[in-house]
Image 1 (tube, rainbow, N blue to C red):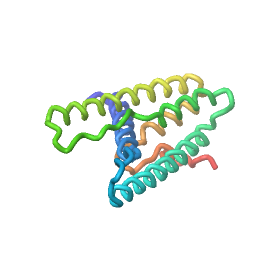
Image 2 (cartoon, rainbow, N blue to C red):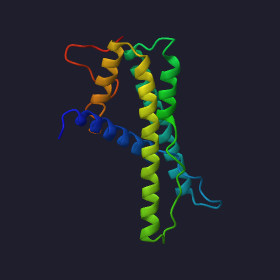
Image 3 (tube, rainbow, N blue to C red):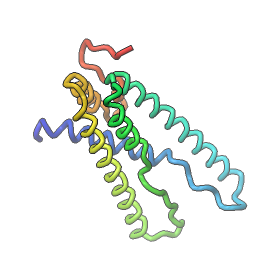
Length: 168
């Protein structure tokens, strides 16, 4: 495989994983009236996971902004990227328990299309940000994107070339 494509594929995979996790931790639809306590507990647990996910995402974005050294002139493009990252993937609909295979597969295709659309928004916002960054900031952004992967070994804010320390 072409070595220039591998980082792009890694970034795409990382974005897909991020999108999947965002969807997975999205708050569930409200329980129907008269639902039992178990359903309500699951809903509250989902809300707690979503709040925790949002707090972690915000911390990662804050660290990335600090590491890049975003200045006032670059702030609109940074804010657009953050908005794209935080944007919802789409509405989540519960399937009836007796849904047929075609309905289940169609829902999965719709979810995948939502992920692809979100990744395209993130890519567009990243390109707009990259256009206003200095060469050094561009290098840092590329390094951060390169090491943001699905394996959890690297985080966008924590990937540092050898010898480079994060901005304090």
